[in-house]
Length: 417
Image (cartoon, rainbow, N blue to C red; front, side, top):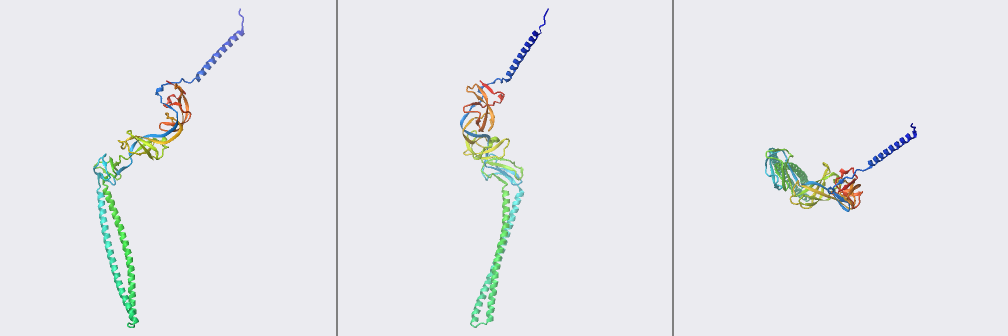
């Protein structure tokens, strides 16, 4: 007969509970440990990486862009009036002088305007000559009358003086003396008035001739203007250089203001370089620069900065300080480099991918053996085309990966093979 032992069953249950609790604890600790494990460091071929070393010393800040050579002196020739192209005398690519005729235009209305202006000028000249002759004749008549009055006045004065002497000697009656004296005074008054009238007449003559001359000058200016308009029917180069473009064809009708041709000076060129707007903010007029035509590099300086950005770039004009290399011509592709400043005794490194001015970022720093690389935070300062200043996070002699490391963003460490 079996005897019941309740304490034995209780001990068995207790041992089972403890065992299961221990198993659960072990599983929990294992799970926690596994959750805290970092991903295994990936292996990277060191030969495919671009590695740079942090250095201390002077750093030259530069910006670079691409562009083209463009002429400094460009003469865009436009039609002065509506006209028809009669013929083309000079083809694109030909060397030209200022008086070289490129196109001949026809405009009968303009020719008629010139003829009308010529006839009006001739009529005005004839009117001026006629008026001048008439006024001169009137002046001569007034001067002759004045001379006659002067002679009569002098004669009357002599007679009056003689009568005064005779009256004093008692030879001539007092009445006769007074009559001759009054006659002399009358001629004196008439002579004085005639002088004043002649002076006024001369002023009037000058005013009438000045008015007619002004009218004549007006017709002369109009005729010269119409002559100039007719002369513009012979389209000339205007400057010495090369005819780069002819924008019309024989027989074509062109409107006033239409571009007919383009003349450039091929040896007087500048580089129009496109600089990223984020880098263009530090560029100043007069800064040193260089232009690479792929057939030589020539030094230059900044002469213009476009005030507006276009498609994320700013156009900067660079004038060469010396002659351009052989083969330089308008529209030739070039590279331009502009020197911003020289920083003395700064910590810098070759510019990593995605590194920007005055921004924070992360890079992989190699350990002394070069077997692994650890992610570190860095702070960048001012940058150049190929270098950037380090303000925090690295020290002189550190080696870092400059290549694009975005594919390893989830890793803090990589192994190098």
